[in-house]
Length: 184
Image (cartoon, rainbow, N blue to C red):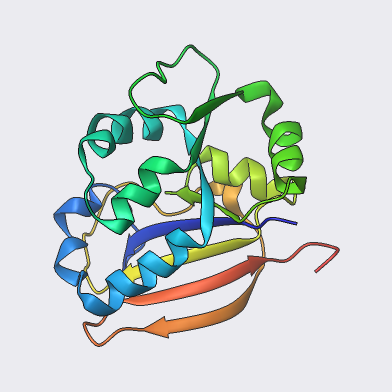
């Protein structure tokens, strides 16, 4: 069965908004190698409509390197409760919001590699609550913002098992957790 893996950049104080303003300084050869291995181990992205629309404005113009070529070539599943233009970034499959759990469960059963989610939000919360989220990979950057969009919300409440800790020489850390379910 395929794994659904959430990958999210966070400040030390738990905020995730505008990562381009504070996480890029922690991008180096080590972190890029980790991100490349994680991303190329996936053959699908699962994104909310808002995240998809933002990424669809930038990613199709990126290319010419193995990382962006891989991201642009894999299937993007976009969860949307309203119409979404998928013409700019293909291949893309729309999952109606009210079919999220059944459709993602079906995709997990298909042959294939991991499925990545970039960023946390209601999509990740819903999948975790349904027992469909296999891992959180939280990239903690040694930055304190003091305010912003939190990594988790009230609906995110659950217990997690630590699976792995990857520490980089630049001070960033990837914490890998598995949601604890009755089957864990």
